[in-house]
Amino acid sequence: MPYLNKFKIRVLLLFGLIYPLYANTCDLEFDGSEFLEASYSKGISPGSTCYEINISKNLFFAFPDKPCELTFARSGWLNDGWDFKGIQGSGTFSTKISDTDFIVIIDATGGFRLNSIMLHSDADNCENTTLETVL
Picture 1 (tube, rainbow, N blue to C red):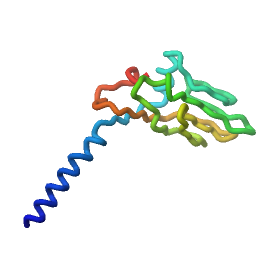
Picture 2: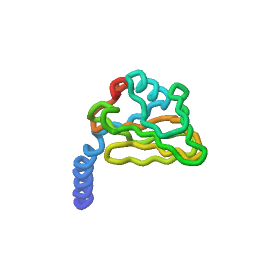
Picture 3: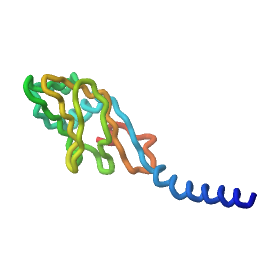
Picture 4: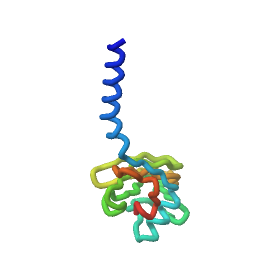
């Protein structure tokens, strides 16, 4: 029985050391249309090589014969401490993240709609965080 108690103590100590590494982070999800609207109202919009973009309707279309890219710069777009984590969207697209940009690649002849965007921060508490505080 003493072995079991030592085991429990070790597990609790290990959990106590590891849990704080994951506890102090925030992942938030925002509606895609609201995110684009709020960004646009602050004079920020994604870079684009697309055939047609309509930010107010949250619609982006590629050329008939080649894909296009929507580029969200990782600095200057979000407030300090926040970064792009991922998106959910409708259409035929893929994503890639570089050191400087978060890029949505829309397939040729395809369209894209940003359903939601996930943002990440190492903040201790993001309970009262709103879209306005991250932009």
